Image (cartoon, rainbow, N blue to C red; front, side, top):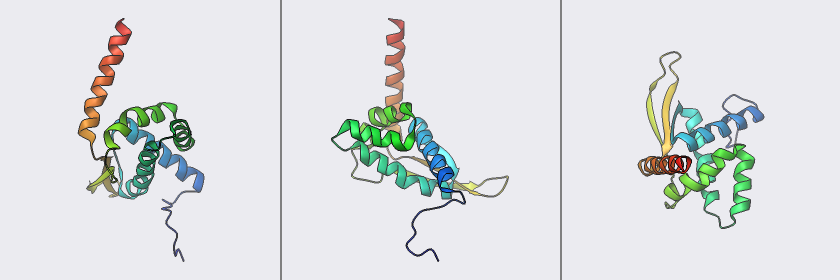
Length: 139
């Protein structure tokens, strides 16, 4: 019986599941919205929200190291702290939204979008960052 076992196993071993969720969290941080199955989106939401909560803590270096311990991609950690957290982190909670789509045509798996709630503001920040990067390269 699985009484009081909260971990969503996704029919994978522990290491594979951690890698899958870390990769999906990196993709969510990088793109702002990803399309995946409903089960994976529901497993990813608590992880993504804990990462945002981690960015709110005052001790910056330790929080970055804790995020890197899970994500394993320095680029994603930098983007999480510099771009995503200031936009999404003003909320008291509920940073992610899951929007259900129809079934996938090949195997009828239920699909969903998982995205940051304030994704419109996040897209504007991406444009500003790219413009400043191009301006620095031209100098």
